[in-house]
Image 1 (cartoon, each protein chain N blue to C red):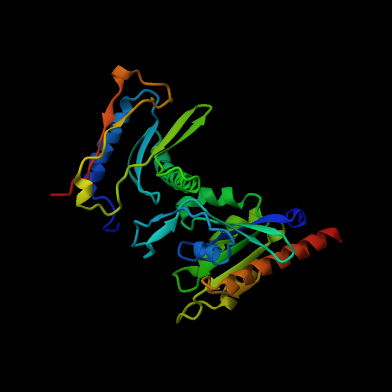
Image 2 (image 1 turned 30 degrees about the vertical axis):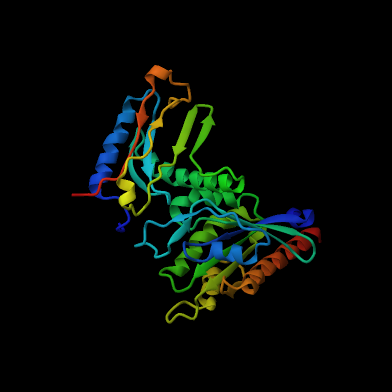
Length: 186
Length: 137
C-alpha cells in the first residue's frame, strides 16, 4: 500500500447526515479541524442545527510516525459530487452510521457502494453508533448485510464523541492497510 | 419544507428577479440557493442543472469561508471560477435562514463591475443592486 509506505496517507470518514463524521474528526485531530458547516435549514429531514456542505479536515500522527490526513464528507445525497472528489486517493474509508436512524441498513449499502470503488482492496471499516436504542439494528445486522453482499469489513460499535472509540476505528483500518501492504509484498 | 425555508411568494419574486438574467448576454444560469445547498429560485437554460449548481455552489461558498477564516482575510464574499468556456460566480448574500427585523433593512448597494464573462463593465453602464427581506402579508 503505497500511502502507508510513504508515511502519509488519507482516510475518509463518510456516512449519512447526523452519523457523527465532523464530531469523530474533531475528537481525534491533533490540529484544529477545518470545518465547512452551515446552518441546516431542513429541520424536517434532520433536527441537526448545522450540516457539513464541503468537507472536514483533520490530521493525526500514528505511533510509528505515519501521518494520517482525515477527510469527512457531507452526508446528504445532493453532495454526492463531493464524495467522489474526496474519495479519490483515499487509502481507506470509515463508514459511520446511526443505528437508530430510519433505514440505517440501506444507508450502509449507499455509502459502501459509493466508496468501495475508490479504495484499493476494499479497505473499509464500519462504525455504528446508538445501537443501544430500542429496535435499532445490532452491529451483527450490519455485518450480516455486508456479508450477504460478499463484503468483508469490521463493524464496530462506537460513540464518536469518545476519542478512544474513533481511534479504534482508525487503528482497525490501519491494520487492514498494513495487512494489504504485506500481502502485496508477499 | 421547514419554517425556515423561504415562503412560496418570495420564491416567486426571486424567480422573477433571476429571470432578468435572460437579458444578460452569455448568462446561462442564475440560482438563488441556501447556504446548505437548497435551490430557492433559478433561471437556467438547462433546468436540470440548477439544483446541482445550488449544491456545488454551497460547497464552494463553505470552502471560501473556511479559506478566508484560515487565512485571516475576514468575511467571505464571492468565489469566481474561470474555465475555458466561460466563468461562474458565487456571491454571498448576507441573509439569515431565519430573518430578523434587522434583515428588513436594505443592504448596502452592490455594484456590478464585471459581466458574466468577467469582461469589465464601463463605468457609465454599471448597475447596482441592493436587497432586503419583506415579510409575507
